[in-house]
Image (cartoon, rainbow over all chains, first blue to last red; front, side, top):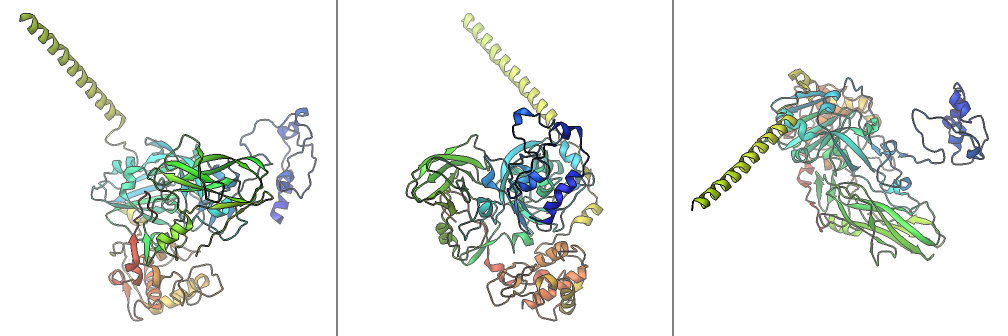
Length: 414
Length: 194
């Protein structure tokens, strides 16, 4: 445990003891063993009450908190932070667990200073304040955002979060980009637009203008409240189904154009070898699924097990998820949790009776275009051995060991 | 005969009436729609040329957006050493077994993606370095410094000669070896894996 965590209780206990705390029974300071995985939470003042029916609890508060017995956390690296998909029970990602990927940290933007500039091939170049954006007719939509570089493999002891935790889902609210483009009088000859962020990377991506007329949005709210700084506060571009990097966060400028810009992010990054060529402007995220339960490091017991997971497609709706419990020999259609939304994580479930023998469990999704999630071998056959790390959506398997342990089945990448 | 005519007349009246009522409803609805979706909402402000100039720093492969100024390889070498080498290494090349904070920039022995073997346009260098580099002080380089860094990086990657000057006219003309490798996405859903 780090010093920082050990310091926490000192800070907390230094606070004035309120009436609420007194009434809430925080004085019943039974201390649980520090070796518990919940130790850092217990230390910050959660009492262990022997019988909660014998003592009133805390009064209503301003902001809710998770149960101290639940500890879903993102897994951060220097450049990204991954969603603990294995800890979630359905498809909305709690906002504080939404994955992060940024290229020069999270900027701090004053919403009162915020401006969005739209210019280029328009009749009237314009600036919009956050207040202006919020006044336009608004739309709410639930969809996933997935980073294009969302695949890790290579070892058995790896969680869903580590394999593909760079996908999350929120209910987003904002204004359709077409509503703004209509306001500006976009030149019908325009074919692309540049989206630019207001972070220290001043990140830019070129986007075909058809996406603006289709379903692109500028969103300022996530799961009912203002969008989080890590997700682009105060406003970001939302391109449903398209690779995460194009959903430019902290959006400050859009330039409408008749050609792409070939920015660093769309040339030296977010491109990948296909045989002897390099594929660029790969926008749509192809269909993908993964079993989140059972998965490493969970263990299972003999008997009935509900296999659970998520499936999604950047090209529309999920129409079918199949689950195999015998290493891919036979496939069974899983139940989909409705309503099934376009370009959205879709929850699937399949009931299975485990007899205790060693096996592999897998899932594969088919979307409404008729695309079925490929195996790693199919991807390598299509793209060549030098496949790279972008737009990798292979079928993945979990090995069920005789003792009930679940481990990932790593497949050779190269 | 007369009766038939009367019947026809009343039919005509009924159909005519329905048509007129329908048209009235249609006109009313379209008026209502117009009420709901005006020609313009009138939110926001017209952006001035000054507003645009302040933020419009993008550069396209055709050179659109490149500013005045120029740079050379010798100056670029000094700027690189002072402001870039700490993260990208002394000569910008991959160092086997070491992971530097910044990616390698200059073609070395291996297959690692660098400017020389992977970047399709030289203008992207100017655009990216000016907006985002150095990492700890983005946007701090002058246009001349950025042109010089472009010159040095292109020369180190053996794409331009050591005496070539980089400016708004010469940079877009630089042909990058990797440009011919790039293809536009051809995936389109459906049963085929691409």
